[in-house]
Image 1 (cartoon, rainbow, N blue to C red):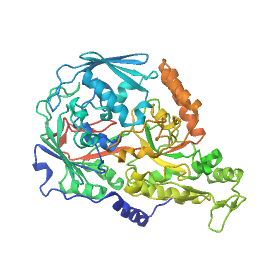
Image 2: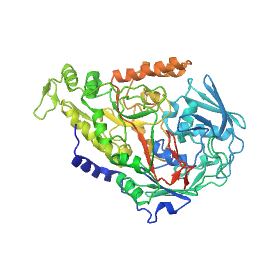
Image 3: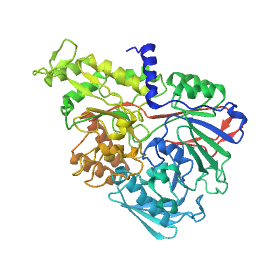
Image 4: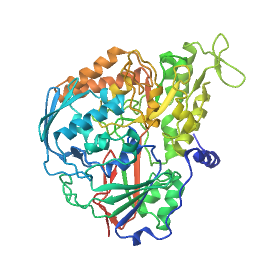
Length: 545
């Protein structure tokens, strides 16, 4: 497959849907010895959106109970030690931690944060979080509904960063504007549409094990929002930025030769194609499988991302998730297999436009909506290439690109409005399966997935909805198998159970992997100390040399 430069340039024009870049400083960034200029792509609406793009800035100001290093090893942080016994995890806390509002860390504060997390997203419930109890001033227990061997891993994320107790009494909007933590920086100012200014917390003395422990080396971090990747790259080249996130893929190889680079892959689920099995053509497994064989996903990823982002065939897990198995050879490109399956499913004829029709003359037409907060310009190009590939076997793939208003309104979330969902889900645990496949209760709406846009509201709980079940699975036996895998006490047996689940999801073509959710970062060579794990970049130890 060949993708022309013209199609790429045409697609990049769609970047206008995601906003325009902001003006950058005139002075070279290197001269600002104690100030870091960092350019990021997407600005969240609130820092308490349950979303990766809110996690990144939040990492600078909120500490976690445990710290995950770049080699995926856990270290003490706000918790000195921890252990699991069945459905109970016990954490022993430090007694010397102070938040930037003067409040002190104790077990009651952690319990209050636990209760707060549960209100923010149904995914917390689906990660088996049940309740927290303060045992003494510096001992806290987390109880789970089922055994959860990955709880400490999950808690390393800034999603589960610890807020000051008094700060959680504020309105949710105010909380999202200015979280208050115990981290090495505090949020001084957020100029929406432009930047967040972080300032050093000079009282900081509790950096995680393996770090220098004291105050950050930098005094100020200017976290600028620049949606266009080419603009971010140009700023780096001109010396106007110290670090940039997500450079254009065409520049990644050059960056590796000229600058310092760092790459991590988000845990949980990579950018995958999830099929709606409740309504429409993909209720038939043969049609889902045919789409997989026809999609030529590996070639698309290689052509569009040019080595900057790898292909991922596993639609359930990303490669940085515990118990992951390689499924890159599943549904290898085969138009012949795709056509045979479509004929078997009743789509034997082809109309004058090249689309398959059934015996009633109905066109094999499916909808893949794209969301501006989840798909960058290169992701749009990849989707357009997918559209061209599946047309070769007769699929009519429509790709509406939603506006932010439509996104907030929950467009294309009802069973009869979409056929494929393209997106990732970030959590450092195989528990992503429960989040993505737990059948809903009485409330079957998935529109509440966009509650992250309604920043003054907590997650809907009535009727046990699961807005993250975009496959619209009603398979409770699958959910029971997911729970059983978590409950398995023997690591090898647990690994085997999760492998079987990944294979089951692939064999049933409930979801197909597309490409990794990559955190690609480029930094000037005069910098040192960037900490980047699979959750977020952290500027705590960065120095300008």
